[in-house]
Image (cartoon, rainbow, N blue to C red; front, side, top):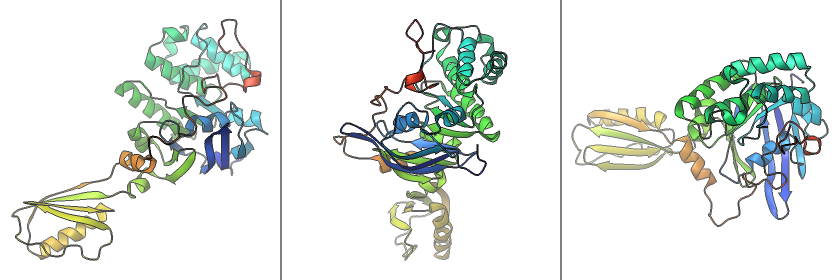
Length: 347
């Protein structure tokens, strides 16, 4: 891995399935060591994007590099650098989970003795070591999520991809997983997160890309995205004034000023910067303020606004059916190299 290379360098990445365009010229850079969020509605192309990175889907055009290595020309280097915790439970259910981890490590050339030690280590790390001899199907839903994370970590990857890691788990487990992946990021792992939970992205991510209909709509920090929306400054006045002066005149950040009895509401961009000027002007007019509250635009509201489109429009890159493999295959190897166990599960 080159220390000077970003974790991901994506340029004009495209993928077409017959008459459906799943990815339409995606370009973005994920810095090494960052916690990067990929947000988008169902059908945005997120799963197709991930499957190209891990070698399950062949791109139609453009380039995708992982720490400087091309995902197709340098497949082995890129796949060894990535650990994927998928949304689907794509696990061989007929072996104890420690054996499943040992098999995964073996695919990546890790000797058997070291594989066993690593399996024990990651099972302890995610908190399910006491279930090491249990089959996957016998685990609770939360333990299954933890196991998928352990499987992604078994090769000690430089890039950890988490595809909806907290889908369907309770609030406490979600927070436990947040703490775990934050610690991993603090230790230097680059993390790429896809999620439908806007709070999750806002809490965890340094930067987020909003993907919609196969295109990147924005790449920014959560705060930068929220600054694109409008805030509401709600001021409670001691007495309702009979008239109001021309408050905040000429301030192009202000979109509306409304009064209803004792309450004055100012709608503005960057409300936290507008509020002090509003207070000064009201004070200068002798209008007494009882209370003031600023309600910021949420990241969820920005997300909805940026991805809103006609429901009848075609959605690109259906995340529930990615065309080539449905998005639920074991991603340890490319399709041509996957081994099928006698029970029909992938090994």
